[in-house]
Length: 407
Image (cartoon, rainbow, N blue to C red; front, side, top):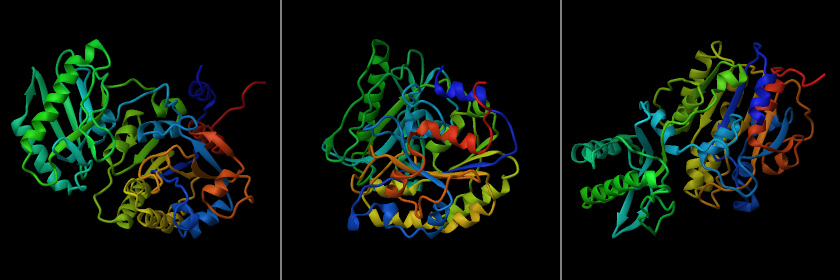
């Protein structure tokens, strides 16, 4: 019996409210003035909350392993990210509302700038979503089938899209067709089993055709693919934890992950700018607060700016989130945790292995040890260093949703 199954047997229902506020890629590493982004940010509201909360840090997978967003979130939701290995493609696909069957293989795509076989920019300068839509329409008009496999692309936000392959004999056991770094040669998908050779051939021909189709374009001149996946089988979050749960997220992948584990995914109106997006998410939270017991509330751009090595922009996002903490707390959740799915230090310019700070507040908190919310305070916090998948157990315990174990 794994931890999640064990916890599920002890879970009970009640009327408590739990809020999981995820600042994607929250954790950092010391850079400007020897401080991380969280340490450099002016966060009076989170600091005040920290003084009345338990603090700690999570390890998303195992120490030293750098997680993707999928494993990072699965851990936060109480799933073993090593046991449940899910391709990013299915998360993106579900997040934009695609139907995926057992005859499909999907992948997450990045439009990229490619010159003479070298990846100049993995994100093609983060084009406007409208430009993405135009390119997807062009590709679908010119590339519809390869070796009897139906091929279709669907736009996401900015540089992201989803590739969907439909046909007989497809298999998702492929390496990523993405070196994950700029200034590297194109990397093609490789079959990891005999049964996936056909799929690899189709994927690689698709990439070549896209490069040929877009060869005269300035920014979007090719694509990269990763996270090949079919439809996985997961225990459903609402059933495991006996809790009515909802997700508030604007980016497809995170909406897809929430949908995959069985949460209701609430629609958030489009908004421009960090504060306006947060206000839109908070309105959705308020409008649905009486309908659900658990809310997953996602903030994206802490991760985006970390990946762009933009220290101060990440600081600004953290400070913007801090501004809305009083409005969130006015709802009086019984338990709130503020954390990230992984660390994305601007110093690294990508995801990293660093532990992730977290703050957990309830009326049962053993507070008084800390006066601010940052990596150093969390490293010496009362809850210590825990596996990310143990956060759900702590949330349920603080919400009085777990029975005593044993006599």
